[in-house]
Amino acid sequence: MCNTCGCNITPGNREFAYKPVNGMTPVSVLKNLLAKNNDQAEHNRRHFDRHRLLTVNLMSSPGAGKTALLEASIDALRDKYRIGVIEGDLETENDAVRIRARGAPAYQITTGSACHLDAHMVHDALHEFPLEELDILFIENVGNLVCPASFDLGQHRNVTLLSVTEGDDKPAKYPVMFRAADAVILTKSDLLPVLDDFDPARAELSLRNLGSRAPVIRLSARKNLNLGDWLDWLIGELVQKRGKLAADVLAQPVADPQSILSNTGMGG
Image (tube, rainbow, N blue to C red; front, side, top):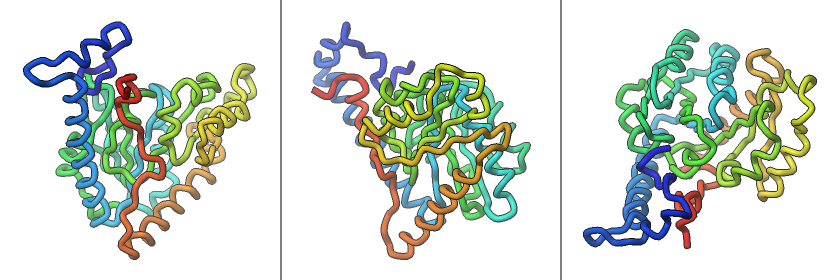
């Protein structure tokens, strides 16, 4: 975990979060950090809107299949839509290399020890990107079911992936991430026949118990199974967003991510 979002603050050291040092506490520093991040995110969103882009933030635990979903989406839509990808990982350009091999532009952000992307990182990446040549920009966030949900990047929609090789109780265990989702993708669904401990109905019930109305889409990107519902949702969002732009309405995620303070237990 990183030293920038407060996720290393635990109940055991929580008292120090409120201990002033040179007139500031870790809590007040985090509040300032989030305020500046949110300002940058709004700047990014207006930049995306000027270019009539749909920007989608993909979030999941490591290995849930975000890059495989991007590869399948690029292959399916290459003749009609121009797609670009900003990749986020602690190290390596591996995912960006996979995307470029599909013929789509990709820029890799390596975060070092940070477990999430923030709006400033994304803004810096935009200088390397041909936004005027794109219809859809994906941001593949760092694999982590906690901190990425707390940082607005300027995206229009959040999509959370849940692999069927993970527990179907993940929405209950990581509510901030799943409440922030505008759509939830159950990935690697081709493995369901050989799994006896993942029930898609239980996973969706856990999501609904959070009050979420996000659609749940089941697919396998690697096997190219049931991609249609995902592609229909994605194209529908692009059409809807451009309609809102025509009406001068700023598009943004339906469910705003909750404050980092709720993730760290410092909200009180």
